[in-house]
Image (cartoon, rainbow, N blue to C red):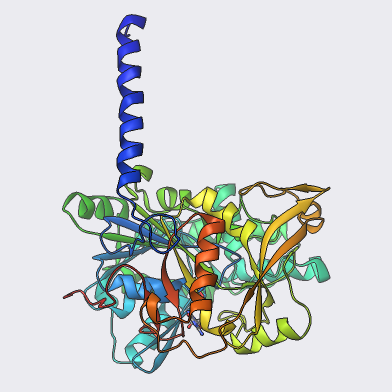
Length: 477
Ligand code: GDP
């Protein structure tokens, strides 16, 4: 143990180092327009992540697809087939629910991490869709042997629970995600690695698990023989894909490879930080990368938050900036705000800055991607929900009520900005955007204190404004 005399100088030099590095960092952050620090593309990072900053469906898939072209590995760390990433590439539309979005890049290795719950039939369906488009990709996909298997009965339970809640339902995708994480937490779940071992031993565990859940949920008819047969066939096909991804990913990192962690769902749907219970059942925020991939947290050097230029959410729960009238309907139809997984209508509203500030506090975004700015192009005036007022007090940036009632009681103070009323879909640089669109972005930066590096101006891969770096994304660039 060090003595007090030995510790004091060390503490002083630590404090000096921190102060120095603060000023060093400050001096490295040139102002762009009136923004706050330099923009960050993510391309230079060793481990970058793309996370949803609102209630999901922000357009994370598009940014992952762009970044993936220059990353060696793309890894999913949370959720299951409840993601709904829609990509528009070379005139084709792809909807990924379970596979990482790096699957469209032939030189990128894709990983389904230990934090994901694996629905094998869905995974093979998505692989088949790729194959049908001439993109057979079995060889650039690896699956964690520690990922939990999601069985059909998990979906049955999901349906039973949602039906019981009736109009108070969580609004899950009924893909069995919550029940699968529940069996994981109950320690009755079965992991991919166990499917790869002796099949008779696996079958015994599987039948025991089915019995347990049947007892818990009042019994339901279930074709165990059919599912076991299907699993036996899948087992052969996934053999070359299943591996210790924790070692694989860390070894790749040690060998200088770059890794992109692809977030599914979003901060306000996080099991701990979201608007509980209207949340998903996994960690959707930055901490989920460590637990869902086995990567040390301090190795993550770039966190990119994707924030839609307005706000949407699926399912129930308070939504302070919701627009229920004509403007909300317009955002829904213009923005095609219907779930990629469920087809359900998304609720729409103005951009909610307290939500973004709260998610930024948790995720520590280095930079933002404001997506779907083009959807606001026809408005004469655009509102931003700038602050929450609760019981007469203005909440500080980052403060967020923990209960549904608390959030319901928040009043929103809006700022109104002039619209740009012109087509921005051909813009590729910040300077090409109309002045009022630039002003909208700059106001978001001022309110969040985070630079905006990427701005979505359309659904296609190329419909993206880059700020402070070139827009030639390809690996050879
Ligand atoms: P994710 O789950 O966060 O990837 O989001 P989704 O894929 O569910 O929803 C985003 C939808 O918006 C997809 O259909 C995208 O193709 C589309 N999209 C993404 N970025 C933009 C954009 O900047 N403008 C427009 N108009 N559409 C976009």
